[in-house]
Length: 175
Image: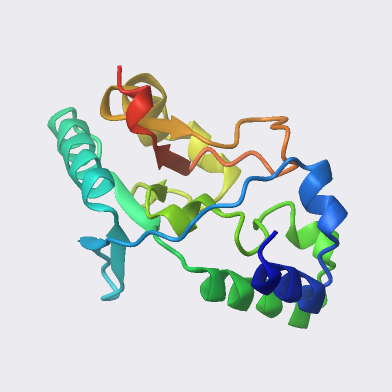
């Protein structure tokens, strides 16, 4: 086990047994990233080159079908994950509650540069209600063709909330 992650988990109040009980994977951080999309507010979303190429192809195919897909979140390093968790702790949330919506540092697919949170303009952003959008229905029927899979369906074994917006590029999943 990585001693740096152990220290981070201890500082955040994350017991190692939680990682084991939830059978969470450790993910290496992406080594090669490219700019995949620039948000309206100027934030730059980065992905690995392969994930970015698949994202661009999928986004264009959706657009060809009249569906607009945008990135709400993409690559996120371990330290950014720590910041997000600390912010929630500072707001008074318990670590158990936080770990239903955020992975422990080191355990987030976002570290890989292959995970994206998707929304459609005017629709809900990182909310379960995304599943009611045409964008979600398009993704559910087409994302696999581009190597993307829904990571956290209802009742997933990791104890995370259902995340219809979170998709991960898994080239072995190409249809």
